[in-house]
Amino acid sequence: MGLASQHVNSLMLPILAVWTERLGWHARVSFAEFADVDYAHPCDVVALSLYTFLAPQGYAVARKFRQQGKLVIIGGPHAKGRLDEVRDHADLVFDRCDESAWCATLRAIESGVIVAARGRGRFVPSAEMTRVPPYRAIKRFYGTGKIPLLLSSLGCPHDCDFCTDWNSTYRKREVDDVIEDVRAIQAPFFIFCDPNFGVNRRFTSELLARMVPLKKKYMMETSLAWLLHDDYLTLLRDSGCIGIELGLESLTTTYGKNGINKRQAALHQIVERIARIKRYIPLIQVNILLGLDNDTAETFRAVADLYGRANIDTLVPFVVTPFPGTPFFDRLRTEGRLFETDWRHFNCAHLVLKPRQLSVPAFYDLYIDLLRQLHAPGLLARKVAAHLRQYRNVKLALILLAFLLARAWNTVRHHLPELRIDKRRAARAAGTGGISESALDPALRPVDAPETMVAS
Image 1 (cartoon, rainbow, N blue to C red):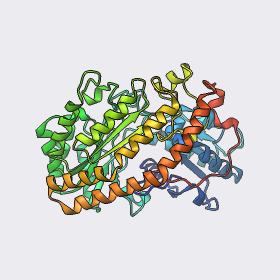
Image 2: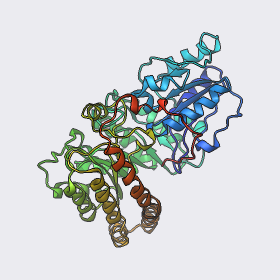
Image 3: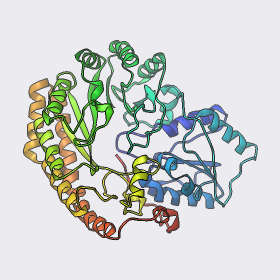
Image 4: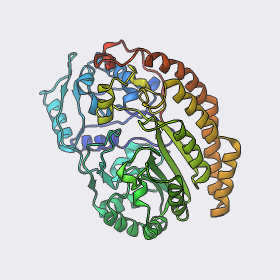
């Protein structure tokens, strides 16, 4: 069971399906909105992969399947941080999963050693995943009409304290295997969904050089530190890279993966580096977190200034979210700065912590004003015009225009009204002070029927 999105699906469930059918089982992967879950489908085992903000609805889905006598397995990012909680809602819980642990579990179920039960589930220890099936095996479970996803590596070598991959091991795939996956993609465009693409320069350079004759178009997510040399940027362009999702993370807090000391660097240094990237890569999205300890009102103005000055096509400011299992979550809990008790708000769009430099209402006022500035019609028109002047590609400029208009409409029509309402919710919750460990556990509260939710 997965969560539907407009453009992409997750890879983990299709990977589990491939491993499952290698054992002779029949597997079905369903990426569905919660209201469309097929509870009548005949099956023996149901596996759910949950992000934190989906946990309450996911628990309701699990409960319905368990009431039917199905054996329910839960994994995903939320399970990594809340194992004890998730065990109350599943027969088996994985915080990570490799093929050997998955297959051993299914064999134990098949032989009757593990059976469905109504009580508290058990934790299944597993090593990290080190190999993934080829794309040609994954794609029939992934679904049609979506943008294909590929992995060139697993894990991330960085230890950003807010990231659910903070303690994962970075592993490169074999270049031959990745090239075979690229060849197997029939769509004209795909996305490398590595947590941080290009971390190993030697490996990535070899991969990109072999991709040049394949003439595929792709996008990827990476850090600024890997994009500082013209020869590497040339290789990215020649291999078919048309877009980069750049994790700048913060203008006030230093993360080594970006190669910039934010306390010392002037904004013009970031603007200049992005301008260099833009000479080679036509589409750039910058992601920034707001609400970190060093953020002030000036930070919001600097973000707006960055988007106005830099040759960035789109900038996405996320509300920093302390996900369970991360050092960031543990520190904020110790400091008594977490005020939220509902996992549904842990989605990078709602404030669940007390900022160090700002009050909760002030944060929302600044954030709402920033979103208005970022989606101002005049600014969007300038972005599209600048893109068209630089690349002379009408088709790409029209795609960018449609994307920016759709995002602006969604922000003005839906997101801003939701934020105004959420400001009152957060201010009330923050006024009650810090919360206890037990209060964080939604298992202590009844969960209603699952709501319809779509994540992009």
